[in-house]
Length: 321
Ligand code: TXA
Ligand code: MG
Image (cartoon, rainbow, N blue to C red; front, side, top):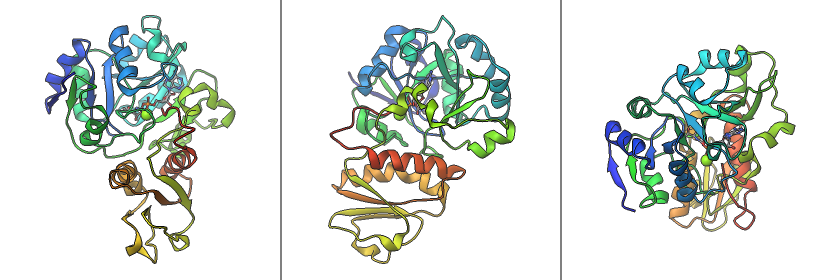
């Protein structure tokens, strides 16, 4: 298929209404969207991404009042979290409304919902006037796309439309919280940190035992072609030929790296990580050294992505989320 490129969310919305696939910007990463209420439209997402259809999608909404179009009920914990963090980089898992096709949720009776804060995404959602199911706009197993150019690198001629916007400000995917039990469960750390979630709801579970509930967590993730090595401090880095480095500290042998990115702070590190992985792959870097950070606040989400990238191997990898 031929991909149409546009900067106009109103034009992109007409593709959604026609049952077509649209790549669009959000504040976290780019999404690959289709009408969540249209079985055939959603099935194209799995084909375009080469993603197993057991891995459920996030449904994007224009406003909180739309949540009851796709979810059966809003439990008190979800209500509090919505009021505190919607629109923004938070996804809540609720009970699925029967009107949402099961293909959206990989057969589950629960559904993940989020309202992005990105103005272009909101305009797309408001104009389409439909819930939009969207995973990250990358081929399965590749790092999430944080620019329309990276999304196009993976999905050109696999989607009907790419809505070109700015580079995603956060750069890591949304925080995912399951609200279907009495005590909410953190399924995926993101820019809405555990610390800020517990400021709203004191009892929270991040128990690894719950991870089976989020099918995407079972898959390998976020891996570039290069091997990822996590290092404690930049001084420990002994580059081989053809290595890359990303971190906060400057390695002593900085000039021996083929690609090197010294981030200003954790926000900057998170914002640029996936694009750096892609840059390294484009130039044939074989090993990327990544400096570890303290796993608190946004650092928890960053370490989650780094650890997943480090444990993914080309041969053992069968999908990402
Ligand atoms: O920031 C984001 O969340 C981006 C943008 C485009 O919104 N989307 C994104 O989607 O990262 P995706 O498909 O790459 O990751 C969705 C994650 C997966 O780990 C999936 O398993 C989990 O959310 N998920 C979706 N529905 C779920 C459900 N009903 N129960 C538990 N986990 C669910
Ligand atoms: Mg993904």
